[in-house]
Image (cartoon, rainbow, N blue to C red):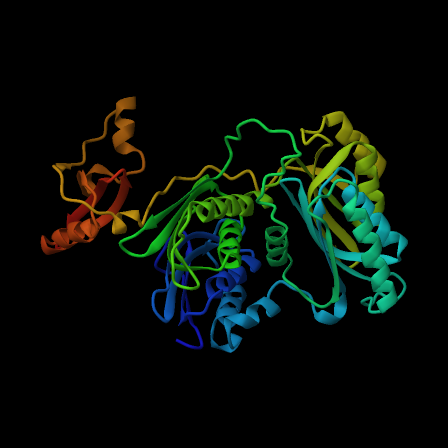
Length: 501
């Protein structure tokens, strides 16, 4: 299993393509696999991860950006090449996926306290210093800002490597970042090289402690969209169990695995379900030293860090897309107009494709509230209605899809058996009333299966015993759903006769 073995299965599931990875286990391997799939613009609907011992075996259910199975042979080939033996090792992926060549740009990394107009000041400094911005990504969270910016020399189009010029860039940007209220300090790092922007942004914001509450900020009201994260120890098995539930969006698994990796946790088992408006993730983790979470302070810190990882990319505000001819100083001019109209940028993605600028900005007013429509129209009139467009937030809105729930928690529960309840009946005939909905929605036709309803006390291995009984009785399981909660289990199983179907 070293080098990795990768297989792409387009047959087993009608809804998704299965990517199976078997490999020798190294810390960070899971992150790099998820990163590779994410960089190919694939959505992970489900994942089953197991890495006890010296190897890991992962299965990812992926779809393309349009919600379809993978049909592009080139993409499938890229997956096999990126993750398989020819990739040499998982470590090489971070240098080959989703980054520009080292000789094409100079990289600037910025962290500091966020404030209205900050992005405008940063781009103004770069324009004054004859720097052309090729690509940039900006995240804000909890009054902190992190940005990775790729620049070239305005005159030559080459990376800036003059030490005096680089020192001046760093000095002036640090002055802008510090302002007069940043108690934690600011940071500017300038280098000639390549990096994975989103990976670095997570690392930068984690190092900047964006998960800590800024007590200088006014207290906000209760947020119903706050992620639900629980951390509990399973003493019997020696794991810490992390359960996470939140609104689904693209790259969510990448974000959470980034944080667990940065915090030096090892994921031994995990189940991910993201087939509806909500996502469910469950991780069984230990420290790299082999121990579970061992204090209440650490448990709280882990919860806050995962909440921060989820919310960094959850965009606040209206999405404005700028598409037009690129020119030196374009970003400085655009963000200056934003500032003059009282707009604050909460997140930005800046890209140059040939001679075209393809940029996206998420904006609120200076107080973090929604922007008035007349303000947006004023900004569009000043910048140009033909190149600045208002778009929906693709990260916060998902099409309604069927919910799916599953948990590995039942495999680690305990206790004795209680009094179970069992219902065994043939599916009811079709009826013409609203009452029939509960029996006819999301189930197969009455003539296609026998339905079994089960309830009882949950315990380790119960699921396995149920299916073993059905197998011994020559029953074929067509579909099943199992829920566990508070040491109880409920299941609905659809079966047919093994011989006749």
